[in-house]
Length: 270
Length: 277
Image 1 (cartoon, chains in turn purple, red):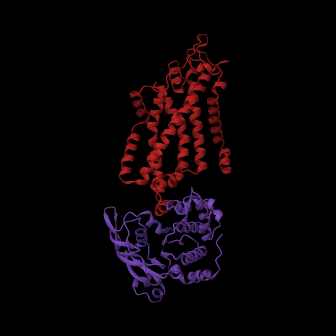
Image 2: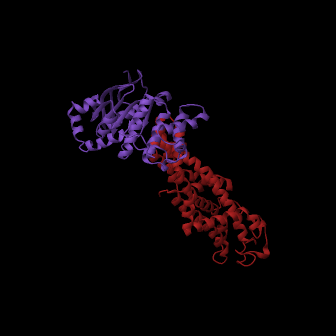
Image 3: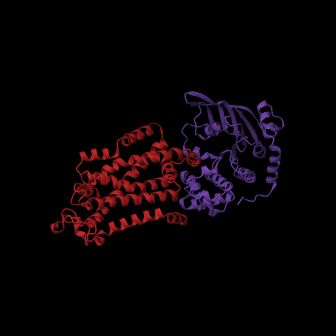
């Protein structure tokens, strides 16, 4: 498989009240087209920093990013913003409380001039249906939706851009376990149907096992290990990875529960 | 909507506020029909009935040239309300835009805009308006201008603070990642979330704009005679206290009623819209 995104020796230093803090230290990896790469690590490991750099929210202090073999410029044109989209952790905050769900999704269509004006309303309905919500939810306010439904809307908004790479920043960690499983299943289905590439940021190893093709482990701003998911869990080579895996005692039970849920047919959490 | 009406009607003070403001607005709009002596709004002289204590048909007494004070109060309300609307219609959009830009764009833009705002805020409002009026000819239009100039910075400050906190919300990031323009993020994403606070402040301010404008005309810097104005009526009458008390007491009460009414409505609105203080 061809790499969709390549990250070369990326470092990021923040200025925290006069003294520089190194959030990322010479990180290199690539994301293959069509894969789901999980990025795991504790808070402060730099996993959110790399997500923000991929999205163009932060500029790397040094290093370079290549998207489809072309270097990503500091100021990204609309076409590049369209290609890389984000699903945030907390859908309560990521949807504007004063705008309808439909308006939030439609923004993406308007900004990127997708479809004609008349067709956009129908398109919003189709997107909502694609994420398992009724099309007439478009008129609702986010406050009238449950957590899982809100996250589905946020996913629909990201899909509206017709991006190739989705950065999923802990998309399920604000949801309860059952809803979490359904949203993960939805994300997996969408990836298959749309041939998308995911960067899935999480600290939940149970989730990683379910959805990721490969896992990148971050510790203190460094990439310490990157390997296919099965290999990593079977044979973690870095001591930090081993600690991370063994430090999740609850996982086994919760993981089993999650896996059971994923076997169930998809019934939307309505 | 139902909830709003419920909150409004549950609190007797909000009902009182609505009643006061409603009465004032109706009386001002229909002053020509309601006022006992509609022609007394102008330069009318009736020396047979001058300086009369309240008695029929002069419910609030007459002034020094024999004009009915109640009639003049009703016409003065008309001017006060117009002034309130005009001042807020000018000051709020300016202040809101400055606050949004400073709060969202940040950097040097923020520094310049907010320091200018601070300069205006650091001058006592009445002093600022008075010095402006000293340069300009006293008139209703210039009075409105002076009050507008002192009023917009409060909205700039309010919206700046709101924007600073809204900017951290996920929906702003989402719009930015999608590629929405700065204008869209400021006016379509952030602004709607500031509207409840702005509306509440506007309602309370409406009374205070009238109060400040009255203070200006009390000092002879606002509306000029013979046009009736609450502030200048109080000023004229003050020379004849306490004997001709009706010259000052009724226009003074008239100011109180309108400021108090708008404050009560503002408080109710704050509760309905869930605005934090």
